[in-house]
Amino acid sequence: MNKKEFKQWVKKTYRDFQKDKQAIAYSGCSDVVIVYDTTAVKSAIAKCYPQDTFDYDTGVAIAYARLKGIEIPKVEEEPEFKRVGNGQEYYCIGKFNTARFGAVYTLETDHFLDKASFENNNYFHTRKRAEEVADKINLLLKLERLHDTYCPDYVPDWQDNARKYYVFYGTKDSTYYVGGCLAADRKPCVYFPTTEIAQKVCDILNGETKNAKSLCGAC
Image (cartoon, one colour):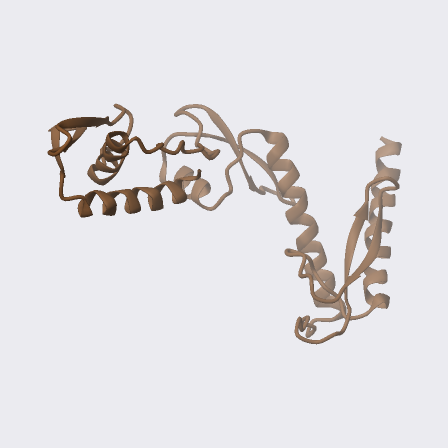
């Protein structure tokens, strides 16, 4: 059960407790709730873990469930991406004197800029991961520029039945190809109105890839 489903379970169980005229609840201390059955003369306890924030309704729901022999659902912990410790390194995407975006080494100092990078999803634990995302951003910007060069006024209409064309990369032969779709918007894809324009974009990208390989071979 995820956290949202658990909250719904708490609300329902707490309502059941409120309807039960024989059950009463009180706080034993700041992090304990006790539910008492006046008819059966028995009680059940719910205690908050030290690292958790005490929630009275949740405590009542858990204690009431124990009192009635109702199974308490287990909450699945969802993965959470966290900031690194103070003084530790992380990477964001930016650029200095280059035309392309790349990974920028940064130290976490709990500065407002660190917080801004984290909240804007521009925060990575490793250089490799930051460079992977930077490459995607560079390609997206390149495609958007080519779109604005060859079909600046084109906006795909997802309500019509016209095919839209996009560019994808074949990893086996390191080549860009033209793909098409009717209604599946593969965000953040850049779309072109015709195969001719999309193929021209592919030719440009493939030419740049070939030149880059030639330069690397000459080094």
